[in-house]
Amino acid sequence: MWVKISTEDIGTYLHVSQKEYLEGKGIPSPLLALTKDVIAWLRAEIRSGGQTVSVRKEMIPECLRSAACWLVIEGLHARFPSMRMTPEQKALSQVARDLVARVANGKLHIESPPDPMDPEEQVSEKGFEDVSKRFRDATAKRLRGL
Image (tube, rainbow, N blue to C red; front, top):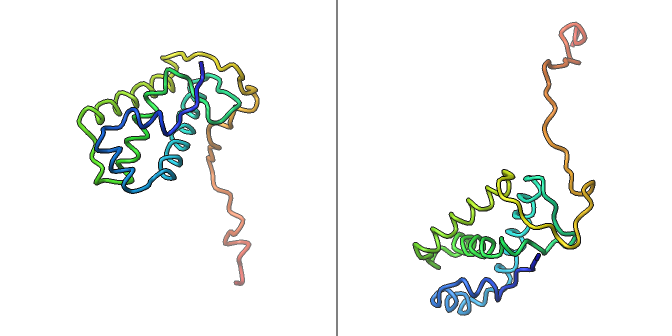
């Protein structure tokens, strides 16, 4: 099943003191922006592993829900350093990164979305153009007299 991550989902992973900190700051918008960024990154990692994603850009596989939440919390800490992460949260953020790396390397297969994106839409140009020699339009011969 593919799910949408909400601010309430992330709130269930926050420590009570962190919730109070965010509520005191009135911070819904950075949380939404961070969530959107993490989801976009997760979807890119899924595609890099050769797997399909949902047409709906806010959807991720349910098996990556907790990883997304831990990574959003890590992003909140980067945005608000005074909102301390617990050692457990730091460890779980690393576990989340490792899980995403397994998906990106194709070592962990995730479930297919109910509404998969057309494979031609999700293929991106890979690689770079290898230039073996430099073309010199402005040679000494051509610039003679300047």
